[in-house]
Image (tube, rainbow, N blue to C red; front, side, top):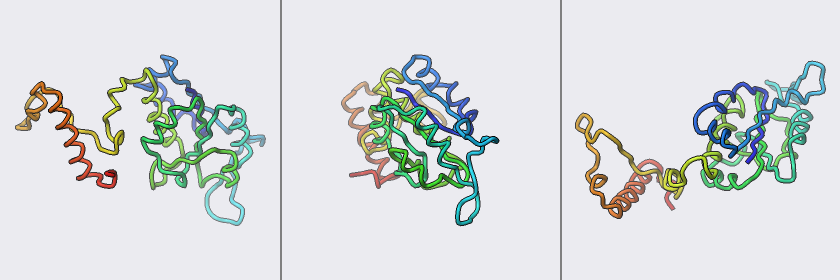
Length: 220
């Protein structure tokens, strides 16, 4: 998979690309991530990419020409172009599983007051990571990329994500490791029983119990 991220702040991605699971996925050749500064596509002498809004109002609006030219410089027949935007559909694990099937993603990061509305004619869809506003689309682009990359074959073991939160509309079951007891808090006996069928049943019940208590809206 190839992921192209269009941004005005490429250095924000330095740590994201050079640490942990993402770094290993890149080194293995499982994913290729390109960070493109769409300021480079401005045709103005000062490389300006934003201007004041028509009709008045506060803030600066990203102009459409540099964004579209940046998109078109990377786009192929296999590309899916996604606008990171609070007006988009709320991102879910189900969506991550669909996007992992794509060969090429182009993620467009906004900034300042927003985009010229006409940019929406040049993208395939819009994604929001929640009902709140951030200073730009860089953090959402990292979140979406991370959630997809970890699902790609060879990045992590499939069993690691098959039963985690949201994979079956349930939150994850409780997990424990050493020591057996800490300040009077003990590991449940069932996990020490060696009875894998009973453990599986217990985990399923704990998933349901936790989901009812914390995210009842997920239950169908």
